[in-house]
Image (cartoon, rainbow, N blue to C red; front, side, top):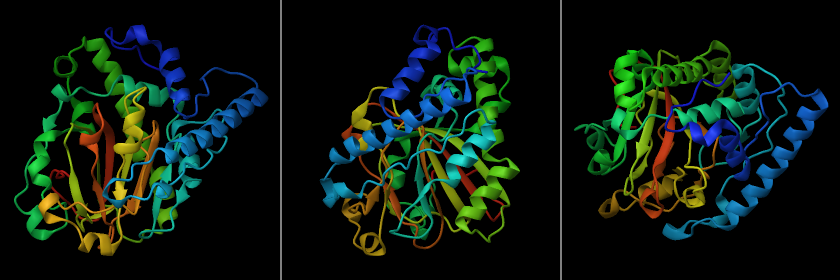
Length: 338
């Protein structure tokens, strides 16, 4: 059940939120108890709408930095899931997720990730930047070359908060950080607890390890909520070898179509990585770029060739909101900017 919305957001209403999600192509099956036939019909219509929207988005893909507009991976049709638990819903979608044919192994991209009511709640209760901390500089990242060349220059444009920290806040602390009353923050904490239980459930972790054929150990994980401001950029990089797998969930601003074609993550070939421009924050042309669609996500295993970047936040208005999840095979301190 969707918790009470904050007072300042209540006028939107859940119906308006879900209606807006439908307008950009994500599943909007309401959480009532219609007949099985009715559920199937609505899900089939939602899947057809997603495919039509992806075609429209691909036609508007940017061509800057040598990007080929035909290389936006499509969102595959979402499997019919009906009345299931949160974990079952997410697993079924993930198992059907598209596996890309490059530029490196084991990359997925999929839409309709979360149950519609839960995604609507994640949008409603996403913490404001005032509740987050600016990303900290790390003196060793550029020297080791695991993260983006020049990314430290933009650390002050990324704000983040550990999902675990948020859940552990007292009602008084959380209300102050959210700028809300205590009841509204308690509802927010319940939403992010619900998300955490899905992400790190034994069943979902097993599904992820199985799909990606992961053999490395799973010793630690984290999830954080992030906001990137205009101008933020991360050059091409493969990520720390301590990471086993990374996954990012997109929450674009409602009705902001410009974000769809600009805010997504790029993945790169080895040649593009080698040819990156160090005078321009390590930028390089994208091989493929994920559409920044509502309720969508990508994931990939981390290795020496998992080259990716973010470039385009300054080319569209608004804030880049996302949830980033990492799994590690080593014990680590607090995660870096990633």
